[in-house]
Length: 418
Image 1 (spheres, rainbow, N blue to C red):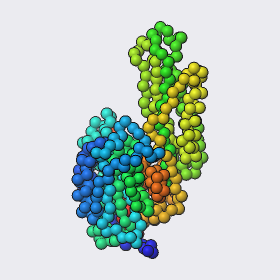
Image 2 (cartoon, one colour; image 1 turned 60 degrees about the vertical axis):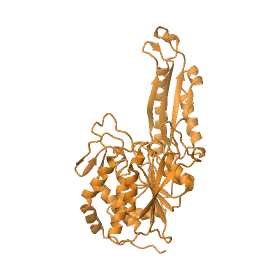
Image 3 (cartoon, one colour; image 1 turned 135 degrees about the vertical axis):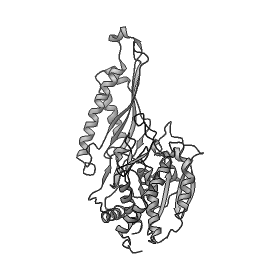
Image 4 (cartoon, rainbow, N blue to C red; image 1 turned 180 degrees about the horizontal axis):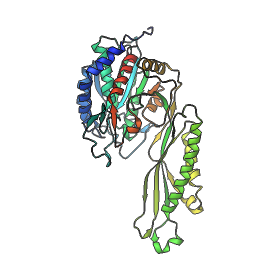
């Protein structure tokens, strides 16, 4: 079918959203107030099903795919409860038209817990037109505004020219295995939009991320014998310095990459955990450093593992170097990259421009998310795009700007009706 221009009057659309702002705020607050920290996501399923039924969607439970653990993209984690008594939801539009392409929206409903430095995380308030609350940014706003965009089209008798599907997934904050499960079970979409806080920027790829552990192990002794012994903590510090040098090297390479140089710090080495020692008066028997490292698609997983091992084993002590234990336990998030001239990106950028949001060039994202699965497993064009600032996610100052939410929904309504 020939491409048609949207029938949307943008001032009318803004006015419609402004009139519903109070209702939208109340729905958003009711949603945020539900504790969907994994594995409690299903507490919100009845609300989702009722809401989507009003918008002409059929919603079904998606069980765990039993083949998931055999997939090379699967990332086991002690906190990831990949069990048969948990589900995703999939919503399918009842009025789908075979003449139009299908677009799938991926949205995770699990959230991170509150941190100790965010004592008021669950005492929501609105200030300067922003909703402050844990989970407001990442990422409980996206489903509500997606639905409101579709409601606007219905209320104004504007036909949808794309068939929307919605994957409502759990466990994303613990490595995304449930998105993988629903993809390998069944998917019938021409393109995918993964809803994550990108501050109204489209990202057409993201970098790798790997988790690794480095353990220095010797044997414990009294502090009196310290000069004869290897202190695992002291050598862990030396290895951290070497890893920081590796980070500098990777950052310099990223700065010279035209698809990644929009970021001030596009890659990160994060020293996430350190475990050591038994008592203050004993030389520690071991020290384990657990890290996440982001890196460019220029490297393969084997390349970066070799580089990590080479870096750590360059420590200035042959015994320590020869006896390091390096293990890869956790994230092995693959990178992906799309051509910037695909129809999905062009159509969204056209809708953005008409809604007074202009993006001249698309880049890779500096974090990884569930987008990669659609590219790696099914080769479906996928971008990451939503409102909200990533720097606010998981933070002690988490919020979402209601005006930005409305602007995003206007963009989406145009995209779905074009």
